[in-house]
Length: 229
Ligand SMILES: NC(=O)c1ccc[n+]([C@@H]2O[C@H](COP(=O)([O-])OP(=O)(O)OC[C@H]3O[C@@H](n4cnc5c(N)ncnc54)[C@H](OP(=O)(O)O)[C@@H]3O)[C@@H](O)[C@H]2O)c1
Image (cartoon, rainbow, N blue to C red; front, side, top):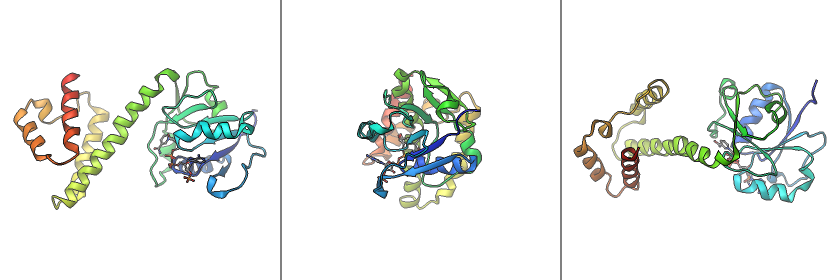
């Protein structure tokens, strides 16, 4: 039997709190350190350090804490590659609310191409994983942000306009959102709308209606991207 891991979460933000919830369910031993606590790192017995802090803080934090270097060091950033810690990006969005355990089990971890075995990196986690060349990480993460974060921005914008400008309840848009998500998962060509139909007059009307809205430029960029690919 291998060594029983003892994890230390650095940071107590979104990813940290979600993974703590999952680790608790998996009965994995862990500690949590956050800079808010103003105390030394509780390193006794720790085997794996999980740097659950903002991307830009990971390298400076490790340089400030050379005492961590003998331990297995893991960060969760999708775009950062550093020789100081192994990357294990959970391909998921973690908001302020916790999810049902099943949601955590499904998460795929994208690990560095040259990292140790997943079972050494995150022992006790039954999750699927994939290796990715560190040279491709920046592109991979740009696609995550485009597809996940930016669609969230678009939908949030839609809900705000529905409620505040059009006097329509956001619930009215939920079946539309659900079907779009379903079509994306199950159909080869899920896109519908004026771009697909070639209805240029509709596109022009849409753009005119968005005058003064910062999302007019977003619409224009999508038209350009659609035509280019
Ligand atoms: N959220 C997601 O959907 C998601 C998905 C995949 C991967 N990730 C990755 O997970 C990591 C954490 O992201 P997050 O969304 O959980 O961030 P977050 O909710 O903003 O939490 C960031 C945490 O980092 C701490 N922190 C920041 N700078 C620090 C420093 N210099 N020293 C010590 N602690 C510091 C903050 O502490 P204070 O509370 O004291 O400010 C906070 O606890 C990032 O690498 C991110 O790329 C996030």
